[in-house]
Image (cartoon, rainbow, N blue to C red; front, side):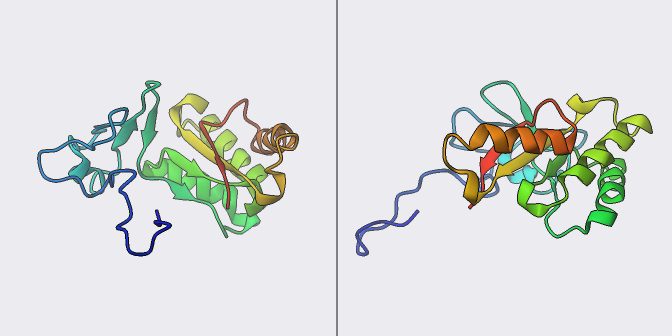
Length: 162
C-alpha cells in the first residue's frame, strides 16, 4: 500500500502469509493455517505444503496452492483441469476474461465423472469480475454468465479483476 505522503513509511495492512516468523501464526485473526495431507502447521510451512489450506472465519477451507488458468488455450483447458486435479490441485483460478471458463467447467464435470474428485464441494473455484462490469447493475449478469459457463451453482470466491 502506498502512502500519500512520500516521506511517510507505508502502513502494513496485511501480514504476509509466507513470511510469518518461526513459531508465530499469521497476524490476521480470522485466518488460520491448517496443514492438509502434508505437515504444514504454521504460516512458514504453507509455501512448502501443497495441501495446506487457509481456514477462513466462515469455516471455509481455501487451498493455498491453485492452478491459474490464464492463457491456457481453450482446446487444452479441460484436459489441463482434469490432469491438475489428478495431481492434487484443489483450487482453480479462472476469470470470464480468460475466455476459457466453459472449458474449465467441462474439466470439472469430467473429473467428477471419472472419479478424480467426489463432488463439486471437493474443490475451490475462484472467478473474477472484469473491468467493464464493475457497475452494480452489471455484477449479477456477469456472475450468472460465469456460473453458466462453468456449469456450477456457485463459486467459492468472486474477485474484482483489475
